[in-house]
Length: 540
Image (tube, rainbow, N blue to C red; front, side):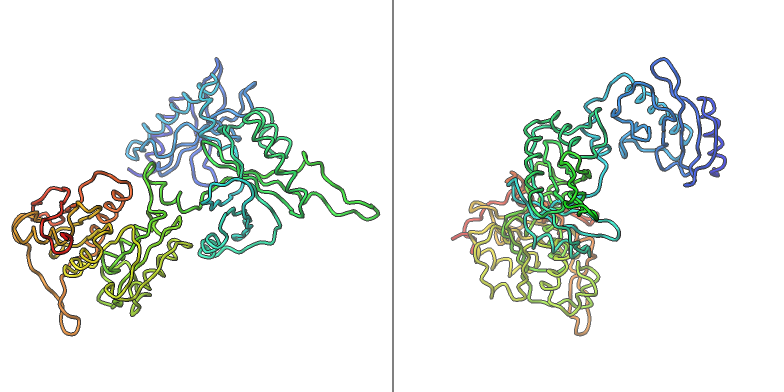
C-alpha cells in the first residue's frame, strides 16, 4: 500500500484518539497535536510519526505539568516522554495504525506513572540521559585510584579528554583513530563512590563546583570530601583544569573543572582576578571505556577473557587467520599476556579467496602480515610474528598452544614435542564436510595423535560413511583440497569456543565436531577424549 494511504489511515486512527494532523516537520515526520490524560486533567501533547514507520513515534508534552519536580524519570528536559527502550519491542511495519496507537497508549501509561511518582529507581538507569556532557575516553587497566595520565585530543572540532594508566598503549589506539593531541595542561584523578548516581531536584544540570559537591554530598559524603580535596590539590598546580573520574557500582562518569576563568590581570589592575573555587565551571563527562578488558568481556559477562595468557598460534592460513582475529577480540595479547603467530609460508593470490588477509598482504609472510592486521584491530596488544617453521622455534613457557595448520604429521609432532602444554588442534574434514577440534588440557586428556589412531581403528569418526576425496589445482599451483571461506570461519569459530571453555575451566567436551554438509550425519557426539594407551605422542 502506498505511503500516502497508510498515513491517511494513521491520521484517521489518531483522530479517533483526539489527535489532529498539524504539519510535516523539517525532517519529514508527520506532526499531530492532542492531549494526554493525567492527574485528573488533560495536558497538550505533540506526537510525531515516522513516514516509513521504522522508528518509534515521538511523544512530547507541550506544557510541563505544574508542581512536577525538576528531574523525573522518563521525561527529558524538552518534555519528551521516554516510553519504551529501543530494541525491546519490534515494530510491525505492516500495521502502522496499530503500532502507532499502541505506542501512544504506552506513552500515556508512562506519563500517568510519572505524575504518580513512580519509576524513581529508573533515574539510576537513565542517568546519562540527564548527565549530558562531552565524551571522555578511559583506558585504565590498573585498579589503583588517585592521579592518572591525561591526554586531551581533538577530532575535527570536538575536544575531549582521554584518561589512561599506560600512555604508550593508549597512544597506539589514538594513532589508529587519527586523532591529534591538544596542548592543555591538566591533571586527572580517579575516585570511587559507594553510591549509584541519580540526578536530583535541587539544581540541574550541574554547572559549577558548588553544585557538583552539593549533589555528591547527597549521594556519598565521603566522595564529596575526596572531590573537594582533589580539586584543591589540582588548583594548586599550574594545571588549567582537572578531570575527575568517578567510579560507582552502576557506572563510571566524570566532571571536567575548568580553572581558566582565573584570568590574567586587567589593565590597571595589580593582581589577577581569581574566581572563587565553588564558582568554577564544571562540564559533565560521559565516560566511554576504551580498555581491553571491557571490550573483550562486554559481550560475555561473567566469563573470563584471554587477558594475561601466553598463547601461540601455529598456522596463519585459512583457519588460523580468522581464529587469530577471534582470539584478539576475546582479549588475547592484553593484560600482560601475549599472542605469538608462527608460520613460515607467504600469502599468494590463490589464498585470497578464503583467507583473513586481503590484497595488501600478498607476497608477505602470513604471520607478519597477520600481525600487521591485528595491530590495527587492537592497537597496543602484545602480538609477535615468527616467520619460521615451528620446528625451528623455541617457544618457551606456554599457557596454550594452538595448531591451525591442518597438517596431520605436524599435529603429531606438536603433541609429542609439547606434551606438558595445553594443546588445541582444529582442522577441516575433507572438502568442507565437517570441522573438528580436540583440546588436550591436562595429562589425562587425549591428544590429536590419540584421535588419529582411534580413527584408523574405525572409532570416533567425524561422519557416517567414507569422506569424499576431492582435489583441485593445476600447474605450479599444486593440488589442494577445495572448500569455501565459510568452512574456514566455522573451524575458527569452533576453535574460539574451545579456547573460551579452556580459559573458563568449563567441564566441556574436549572433542567437538560440527557437520557442515547436509548429505552427511555425525558419527560421534561431542565428548571428552582420553589418552590412548601406547600413544607415541603423549603416552610416555
